[in-house]
Length: 184
Image (cartoon, rainbow, N blue to C red; front, top):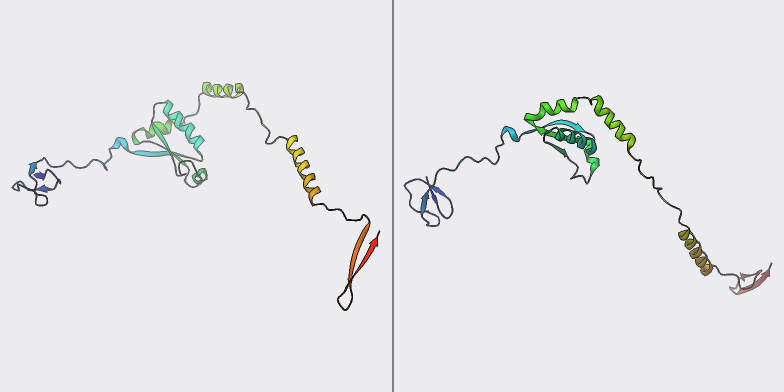
């Protein structure tokens, strides 16, 4: 089998130059079958558990990794931007096919009494987080708001020209206006 040294087109053994670009041909062994799309058994993974959220899936993954089993957490939530999308298909924990039985047995195994005691003592010894109120009453903001309210009220309030008096306008049938001053 011969191949063009410029464009790579293959020709039979009796050809001497490329019919496309007139470059010399060289002997090459046949191309090996592509292994890009072929995956071996060691590369295949299987879903062993489906969790409701990333936190529980992460705990199970750390348990498997601490025992030397490689695993992957996968979810269809746009890289964590939309966590509500995990409600439909959940968060999947994947392991290699060869490790599936060991991983399932490890996840199904109950905690030993020593592990349970350690978890409980760690929970009791943990310092509770500081509770910060959702909002604090800000006296400065309150006083500023009252002051601004008083200023705006003074600008828009217009006292009558003569305290206790009122002007009433009446119109005669011929369209003339009469002013009547009332005091009260």
